[in-house]
Length: 285
Image 1 (cartoon, rainbow, N blue to C red):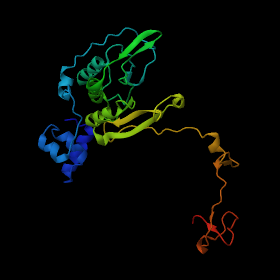
Image 2: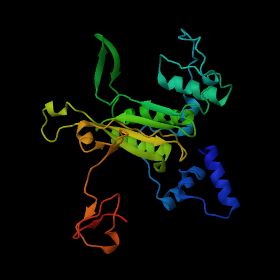
Image 3: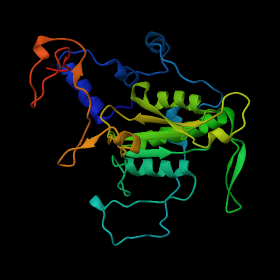
Image 4: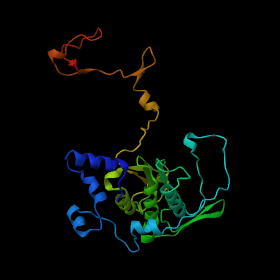
């Protein structure tokens, strides 16, 4: 049962007030493998060879003990004694180590502290990738093995993510649609927040029979409805700034016609020393 503290609070309040429990909590409260439940709620999932149960993945994945090799900037004390970690090794084993630590002593102080996860996994390209003429990693896992490879890690990532945290997963057109279904299973379709399209500006140079592949996908999921999101802003471009003028205080304003081409007696009044022509009216009261 994957209930966060916030989920439990909402469910308890619904029961105490005699209100129906929201539909989104049904899949958390009841066994999704129950045939009657699946039929009644029209639950669906991706089925493929080699797909393990979530409980078995958590129970059987070994944890690799984390050994400190080097420390950087250790004299700079962070809030609540937080320390960043750069872990070298199999990320599945590292995730299990962090999971077990959160369930126990919390030595790494990550319990309910991991607010943001971004992963950029292999894309099932069947290629070897080099860095400085040396092999960096092999992207040779394909088919259902690739899906299960990603799924195992997503299951543990959800477990270590804070209740108000969010995850962003970057993939492309080849396997994105499969992993989207897996994300719906693990995080809940109701926690799918958005699909971010990353446009590749050099795509016009590609030769393609058919449409040019010009974007990648980033799937954005939260762990609960109560997640952290900071609004993103960018500076105005030159084309946008040309539409504005500056007042005496340096504030921007748009010099546009504020009248409509209709006659309305209630909107033909003087405002700031100006009155619309007899054949027009102010656009607002």
